[in-house]
Length: 239
Image (cartoon, rainbow, N blue to C red):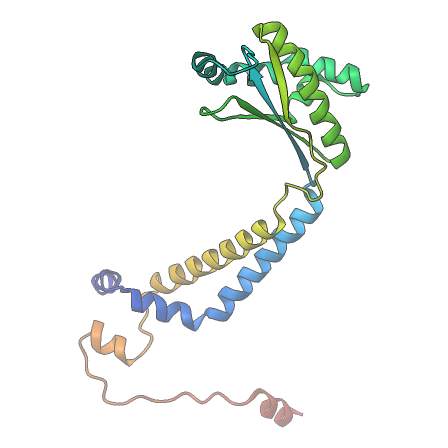
């Protein structure tokens, strides 16, 4: 039987897998729906919505009324990573907390700030996340104002100009409810399919006449159908 089982495993094809799964399609769909509902409920109940407000600045090392020197542009582009570190520094966070009279630590505020830079430009994007959309906007504006002064003082820059003011977010950036629900549904279907295949191919018992002829090399002369008594009739007869 062990040799037959090995031979059986080696002959598994995509069609065999498809046939096994299509017979259990309802179970797979139900498992997907159950896990999708669980992910949806978990997202709604246990994940607090976060709102993001975004503002942009550009740092200029030298200002001329007619043009900017190409060398100044290259240096400014190279230093955008330094600007990002200054924006997320403890000094900037503490000044923002003092300005807005916030009850939080500098590290907690720094954790709300994300700075994005593009190596091809001198534009720095400041993104602030908070559970309150209005607070997110106010924090972004405050971080931009204070970090601009800090950059000019520390880096000895001529100016930090405003590109975009902080927006008021109208929808949460996280959690992504739809994405999480779809992910839960897909995961449920995959788990159900994996369990069904594992259960099917780990079972080396003879299931039908085809298995007898193929694995035992015996010809089937006849088959005897089973006829189980109807439960209702049996129950009525007992009464």
